[in-house]
Image 1 (cartoon, rainbow, N blue to C red):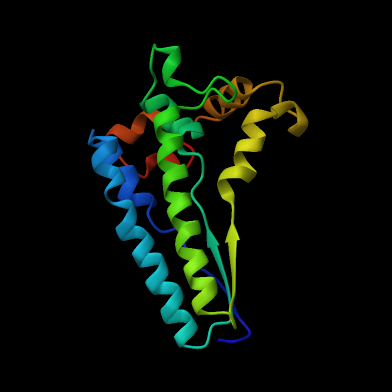
Image 2 (spheres, rainbow, N blue to C red):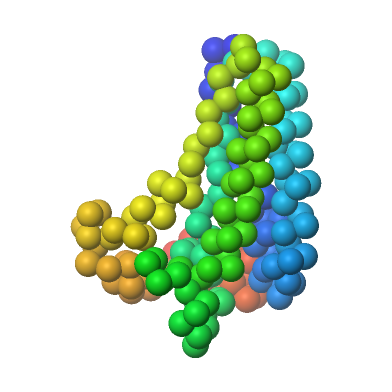
Length: 170
C-alpha cells in the first residue's frame, strides 16, 4: 500500500445530485455536506492506518456549469446565473461550500498525518477557468460549448426519469 496512489473520492456527488433532482431544497442538501466530509476524512485516516502514504482528494466540480444541471434547472431570471460564466449560482455555491469543508478537514489531516502525502485536486478552480475563458481553450464561448454537447446528443432532460442517463451519450 505504501507504493500505491489512492484517489479518495469523489465522495458526495450522489448525496447532492439525487436530492437536487428530486426537488429538495439547497438548504437541506447543504446539511448533508458535513457527513460527506466526515466520510472522506474517515476513509483517508483508515487508508493511512493501513499503510497508504500518497492520497489524492478531489474537490467538487462547479455543479452549476454542468450542462445537464443547466438544462434541468434552467431559469428565465438572469440573476440566477453568474455573469462571468453563465453557470447557475446556487449550484456553484454548493460545490464551493463542499470544497471549503474538504480543505478545512484536509488541514486537520495534514497536521495529524505529517508522514503521509495528501494532495488536494482542485477540480473546481481548474474547471471554472475553462468556463471563464473559453477562448483560451479553443471555444468561442461557453454557450457554444453547450450547443456542441447538445448536438452530440447528450440527453440532459432524461435526468428527470433516469438519474444516470445524463452520464452517457443518448
